[in-house]
Length: 414
Image 1 (cartoon, rainbow, N blue to C red):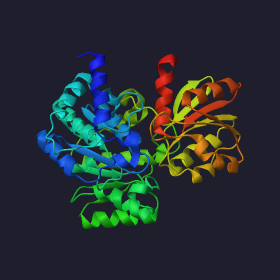
Image 2: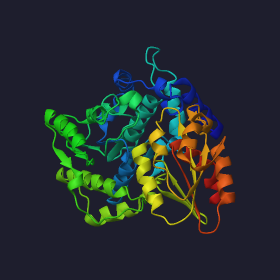
Image 3: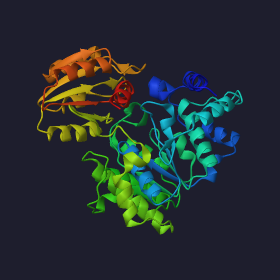
């Protein structure tokens, strides 16, 4: 297999299957029928691995990577399934921090081309069965599976995990999951299964009530991670990581109750070495020190508020590059933009990317200093040119903005 053949195979996958990452709601295929048939076609690999299921609006990527890092420190072989990817497709599926083998991806896609004609999976369903099969072949000790979207009807919800976690519930994807926190919480709670412990990281009593009720219905132990007290820290920067650390500690506690060994020292080491152990980037990621340049993939109002609050705590003039996709509600985001900043709004270079001209009326109402660009790279080069000593640059608003920036600039910086 050549790199060209690999890229052709991945391109085929993107073209053949509806892809929410690129197309949005019209590519979303709720329900488990397709994934059930896919798993049966491949011999139900998800039943041969020990899974940990992590859902939630924000924090599930950070939490799953922190947990993977801790378990790796203990010596376990850990599979990790996250989405979306920032630069390369293989980032979605990792074992002990190493991206999925491209040879495997290529050959697996050839098998997908021979599916029965009456199975029409989405892109995410394709990648989910690919992750299950890879983890099964790699004989991992644990497979940490991040929910794609929602929970109840998400294709990852075919698994029967050792333990489940819901990091939090916020307003996001309302066009699919519901208009209220209670409705969205109900969808997220769909991953709670009979007699399987569920860890909750949400402080909102309304959300807790929804999750607790579902846990009681399923006879599932409910663990409130927000009650934990800890001074442990992670190399994943961002004040919001304190909440995710509690979720991870609660998950580890449940695993220890099942007689899996995880030492306190390895918990501490794992939290402090997430970047090294898993290769995770994108959350409060320091791209450079001069000028100080931070990336963060927070992309909804709740996630961006945490990020913007932290930016406001930094006493520097800021050059902030933001971009959004079409299905994101950004009215509320405009109300919480950081102070002492110049803004550079750009269109992410994907089909769903929203051009800033479409929401320029909101920018004018916000009474901020801003410029509009056709691409993230154009915005970054302009910000870098304007950035003076002692100032900083921030890039965010979407996974796609951060991914586009890193793809263009990470190799240059290295």
